[in-house]
Length: 151
Image (cartoon, rainbow, N blue to C red):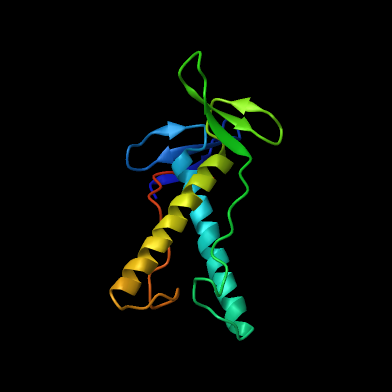
């Protein structure tokens, strides 16, 4: 994760610094948002497994225990016919924006994560290996995120 959130002393505002490219930006990069969503997902998975274990229930991922819940995303990507550019429309507030909203980015990261989890479970099943989530099989890999938040 080469991105770091930092505090600009002069303005008191946060900005994002990429330690690999040494680029600085004011807007939160999509990679930073996706990485934050991944961190929450990993913690939620661990919490669900621990709760299931403590309750004597199943801890394997599949029909016996709920996978990551779908994050709330009221945004829809649409094509502007006049400009040929994509914009984002909020189905709830009816707001339109040109910049990709964090909820849209987090939802896209969730969709990729769900597919990757399914692919890993299928590969483990086909190889005769374990399909439960825990020490026996790798959880979601950390997404590449060159952005980091700093004070």
